[in-house]
Structures are given as C-alpha cells and as structure tokens.
Image (cartoon, rainbow, N blue to C red; front, side):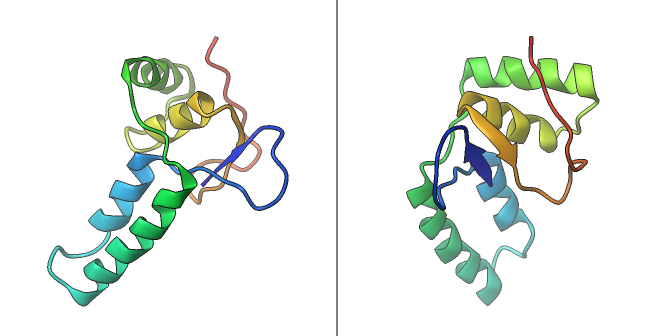
Length: 101
C-alpha cells in the first residue's frame, strides 16, 4: 500500500504491480484465486498507480541506486509517481528512504 504525502485519514494507493502479485500468490483455478480477484476489485477503488514510461525509467534508476529487486522496483517507482511518502510492505527495510535524483 502506498500512502500519499499530505493526506489525512485512511487513504492510500496501490500499484498494479501489487495487484498482480496478489493473484500470482495462488494457483490459477482455485476458490482462493476467485476470492483474491474480489479483493483486487475492492482495491481498485484506491486508484491504482499505472506504470508509464516515466515510472519505468524511475524504477530502473531506483534499482541501480538501491539494489532493489525486480519485484520491488516498480512498487517504489509507483510510490514516487503518486507523490507518496510511505510504502507499507513486508519486503523492504523499515525506514529506508528512496531518492530518484
């Protein structure tokens, strides 16, 4: 989940990378997969951050500078694209800061 800068309340954003990752965690034809699709539909209300050429380039720069994995690269890039201050994830180091310039 991505938390925008300057926003109050329980607002967040999500990246399409994260949504796709949720589906890949389960088998394709299981009841759990159908449940995950429902959860993803609910998360679409969070205005997912789309990947465009700028986000892709930013992700590569972040990967080179911070040694991000190919899975974390687009998530952190989406955070920057959405002007978010925080990323809630289990994969990155707590308190880590990312600058693209």
